[in-house]
Length: 252
Length: 225
Image (cartoon, rainbow over all chains, first blue to last red):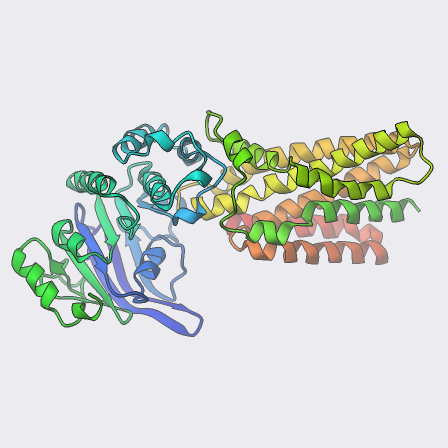
């Protein structure tokens, strides 16, 4: 079966500085996978490379077997990525942002469910105000809603739970879990081990530019060459093992 | 003489159009004008042209109008009151149109920042983005033509219109080509403008080849970026 996301021997660098090297892993449909690691370990770089915002120096990234070079528009239709809150247009309202995206995407009227999600996240009262008036958390909610427009099969989310209030974070996790049950794959970078314990199915540890692992492999070989494996977060023993791992202690 | 006047108008209009381009295009997180933010609260469908219109509205403000008082220096001394009023109105209209054009064009790099990962076809994005700026350019040409005609300089209308169209097209093509690196837009426009002015001084007929070549190169870059 074709994996939902396949990252093979990925290398990424900025000038002479290598950020990632030899990163390989695969994600299947319906998984909620966390990407955890200390600051500067390359989590955001990896996510930006997956969505094509940062050019890679070596390797292959495929979503449902398709790469960015095959067809950029079709490739982008397969994932949703929450952009940084500060790049949202200040002078448009939240409603206008959602509708603008819906109009430009050419796939019918995909924004109806976005307003339902906005209500669930507590964004409805803000939808008719300019984005420039939003707080960081409110912008974050809008960025998440924009990422979910079009019901993409892969969600790539970079520390999106950080700026959210507890109610919104709970609603978002419920929504992500609901989507995962319908076959959507979620890749979520996070610093919170609490989130890892209670929300994720599996986790990847990003350390020193490589994806390290403990526990159950994410997929069977040959998609996951050593040393890339992952934690299975479904048992309490695994959670204890994560907490006790020497490498985890580096940043907790 | 006509060529000199046309060249001068080219430089003036391009300066007006791109004067604040490097800082404006490179600015990421801007301070919000409360009045403009309130204006943006008008309900309606989100469209690129609506976004451009909202951005263009931001040029209206006391600060903008006070800075336009410098236009009075352009008016010859000894003019009658009617001439003075009409001249100020015409110059302010041209300056406002140029500023509005620049604001609407600057929407593309901003859209690129927040829509870069969305499945949007480049041709569609560029086509919808270019409509309002081109309409503003048409209005600017009409005002310039009116001013020149009223000053018995009808022979300059066509060169001035072509110059404005060429410069506006070049500016928009530069923005389209460099929208992923907005800090390069001002530099790219300056370089292409220098090439045009140099050719105009040395071998004017070559302009008919150079300008289309520049446009094709920039648009190809914009479509493949």
